[in-house]
Amino acid sequence: MTQEKRGGAGQEAAMGQSSSADQKPPKKNPLALMMGFSGRYQKFTYLGMLLSALSMLLGFVPYICIWLVARDLIAHAPDWSGATSIARYGWVACATAALGVLIYFAALMCTHVSAFRAASNMRKSCAEHLMRMPLGYFDTHASGEIRRVIDGSVGLTEALMAHQLPDAAGTAAMVLGMLVILFVFDWRMGLACLLAAILSVGCLAVMMGGDNMRFMGEYQKALDRMNKAGTEYVRGIPVVKVFQQTVYSFKAFHDAIQDYGEMASTYSVKLCRLPQSLNLTIVNGVAILLVPAVLLLAPGVSDWSRFVTDYAFYAIFSAVISTALQRMMFLAAYTQQAGNAMKRIDAVLSAPVLSEPARPEHPRDASVSFEDVTFSYEGSGRPALEHLSFELPAGATVALVGPSGGGKTTAASLVPRFWDVSSGCVRVGGVDVRDMEQHELMDQVAFVFQNDHLFKGTILDNVRAARPEASREEALEALRLAQCDDILQKMPNGADEFIGTGGSHLSGGESQRVCLARAILKDSPIVVLDEATAFADPENEQLIQRALARLAKGRTVLMVAHRLSTVMSADEILVLDEGRLAERGTHDELVRAGGIYARMWDDYQTAVEWRISGSGREA
Image 1 (cartoon, helix red, strand yellow):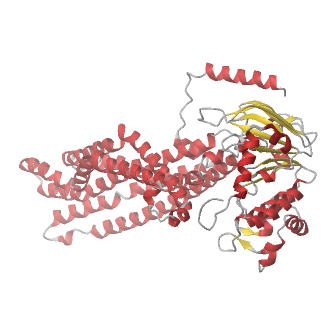
Image 2: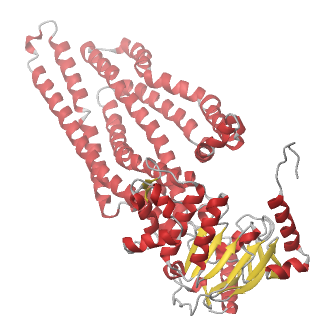
Image 3: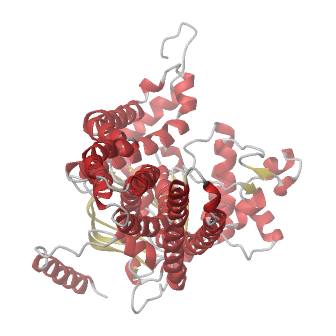
């Protein structure tokens, strides 16, 4: 696909976006999204809700039996020998209570099956979607934030489906059954009890609705920020301890805690104190509201035994009203939390992924070229790269140098398509990287960055991560070529030594050599190096340079470096400044030109010769 065609397609897309700018996307129902992840197991959710409702209705039978017992006892007092049905009422109450428990257990079994399936599918969908995202996405989204979405948010939705949905069905059945029973025996006493329920629901509406609902969204965002900052703070504890600082020295974490504390205090103290106090008073004092009703009704009572029986029933039954209202309160809170969690999951699943070409093309060689490339990070006020063009012939070594923030790492990350360019194109083997399949592009490029990551496992497993089908001998040969012999010799189990948590630990330079072994084993024709010697001591740097020489042999190499001694032998050096190509040429040519590179070289030479004299002054 030509660049002109891409431009036309981009214009058409932009026109399409502008024409539909006024059309807001339909809102997604969080509950429908959750249920959709259950797939064919949705039927277990509905079955569980039905069983829960049945269990709750059976729970009313013991209260009716209590009323019947009280009726018979009062009717036959003081000679209770005539109350012959009391035992039968007791057995009916016990049997229905036990049956209700068994049915509720079956309901939870059904909803848990569906909830576990939904949670599993959510995690798998998130993981699969993350695998198709640009790798640069993980530079702008902290690992703590992503982990909270995949683990924490999915856990909230799992709890809602497994427990709250069946409880919601049971609560609905409880409310309907309660409304019926309240008016069966004495509608006037039932109305007094219902008044308490209405007042309590009003208090809940004040706490959960309107502006408070929007406030809860901000509360959840504050909680996310605190978790994210907490993860970063834990990782930075060594630095904090070295400089004997406290949590207040980590401003982001401190501010996040303060923000969350203010949110929690505002919600619980300022917004909910009065309605919650009224709610608890009403919910726990329903029986008290019956006293005025009894006093008003007593003068006109003709059947005192029935009147006392009804009062005893409603006084006992008021506990059901309290339970129903508490269920509604917790259900509203959990539903709101799960809804916010589902929105965060949907935000991850809706994040743009790298497009796959309909008709993939194949590179003809290992050359790399940038053609009028401009790239801007999301939310950035200026481009990181601007109209950058250069060619890297197959088998050549090109170095990117320049001041910090000049765009070197950004340019290197566009080759393996960590990001897609804003305009222009990056070609590998004459093919736009956007027209190549992701797997083929990854096979073409090996990259070694300054912050490469080693997995928890053996050294051999870490190396074979680049090519799992490689034999043990091939992995050991890659370790040898990466100058890792001294590492293996000091390990009790050699290449089978476990590294990481619970195992041996490697220095920064040693870890980098193992990463280089991984790149060597991958055997890709193009190698991208970003400050591969940044964290190495002089001894490790010498070994890494040997490994880099072996890795670069016969391959196309694009390297980013601040240590100019590592780029002196490059076929061409490109100097980037503020996202633009400022200079290009060999080391000698650029030194003679007296430009940016020459000044950087002078500074580098001064830094190399710098030392501390005995008097503590620079020499």
